[in-house]
Length: 386
Image: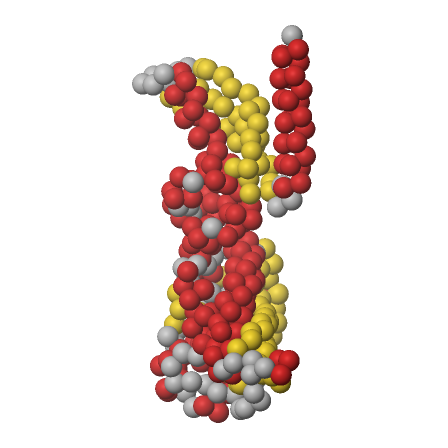
């Protein structure tokens, strides 16, 4: 009896420890109820139960992916949800509790309450692929000017140390990166310097010219200190600051900065190492902001619709009304300007811009219809046609 009591005490202590541990660890987790089903006709009951439990875990992960993008997106783009995510579903399930299970009509059903680690899922390459696919795989261009010991900002013919470090990080997360070396060879240095110094419209223009939806522009500086404690070792401090700019509308979608300090006898080697480390750190932080912006845009995107060839203000009012009534997926529409037959409208969309552009083609008011002449991720150009 004493052995049993001692054993029960150990179990109680273990349960209390696990309860405390789980409570302390699930700050970034979410509780999801999911139901899994398996056919019992061709397998044993025990195997069917395991299969149903696995199915429930997969569905819990699917729901968690949905919270990161959009529940409608999951339904509409089910094929984008990678099997490789689901094959590792147990890795995202922190813990689970079986709420109920039953056998009925040859099926075994298990319902669970699962704790899903959202932070792991957010950082997972496959989850990022889902989000990038929803955003039509935006291409990124990285141009960073470097300066050491107060010298003028340099734009190297090839890739700078900071650019290389940042590009490597973006490539590991499946971003498509446009080669900036060609840009440096063809764009005048003064223009690149102006873009680096804060001319967002020029940065966006360069991005459009080279088919990059997102342009990352910034400056990296390295400042060596005096020798450390009468040695020949110097402390080199680097600082990098960048902006991520949308090419189609020059919108700043993210900013980030990072710093690093390295000690080395050689000033150039120390700066090289510091640029490399701070570049990687900055790229990781910037990617999180870009992905969060893309995630929000898949939920409710802001799109600029420019329509030309409008004959009168009353015709514009009629077009706005027709768009609201017939184009599903639109939440709000705001008129920004109307001048010389050209209207600029700001739309709040619950769906993909290209899908919405296709719907515009079917809208008619009277004997006129809308012809789409251009589409980017955040802009639609159109004209009135009779």
